[in-house]
Image 1 (cartoon, rainbow, N blue to C red):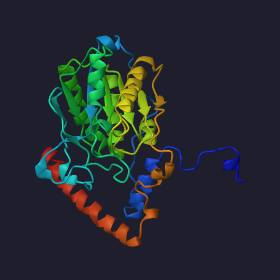
Image 2 (cartoon, rainbow, N blue to C red):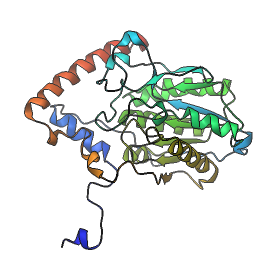
Image 3 (cartoon, rainbow, N blue to C red):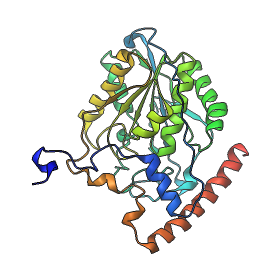
Length: 311
């Protein structure tokens, strides 16, 4: 009998995935010699609620993109699609039907659900919170934040634009839902920016190491695959319970760097955590193919970025 069996310990893999290490090793294994430097702060801004949630206007921020059929596959099972990326913040009316997709970012394609939008954009849960009187209303728009590897561009360009849109909508509090690893960094930087401007925030994310390394005021961590940070697929009860946890975190966080972990469990088998960007599970031929795909995607993204923002 092993010690793990004797004491009913969980398997070593059954812990939050270290995405910074995983992606670093992934790109080193593909031949990229300069590791990415993630955002990291010692101090974290914190803005307490200024009025009860039932008197507050809530804004939602996503890194998903509105579906555009001209930009290639973006539905369930779609491969990584750099051609669907966006590089300028957007806003759309909250009461229009929103067909948001996540094929343009590095989600966990083996395990995440790419069909149920509630897994990455909890609009139904937010509207129910309004109907129940939990919050006063949703902002007139929801907001799209680009997934940008440039922290400077996120802080100097994208975050101020999102803030200006929120101020125009009189947003009191905000919930930010990232998808991929860089999405988690971008949303964390935005959360810090909004808090410094006086808007309390919660990040609903799945990449614990990235968010906590950056440093945010409030973080609701769900140990789910990247791309499904908001809820379990096809599970309205999980949508409601996770969103309620985010609201409670807005109300009850005592200070910056408050993390709450959702009690929801993705699977009793933690083997799924070994899949994402794990070159050890791939053959040399698959690694070579991935290197070509990454180079093609980078060139596509570079061209889109030049057309969109000129840098």
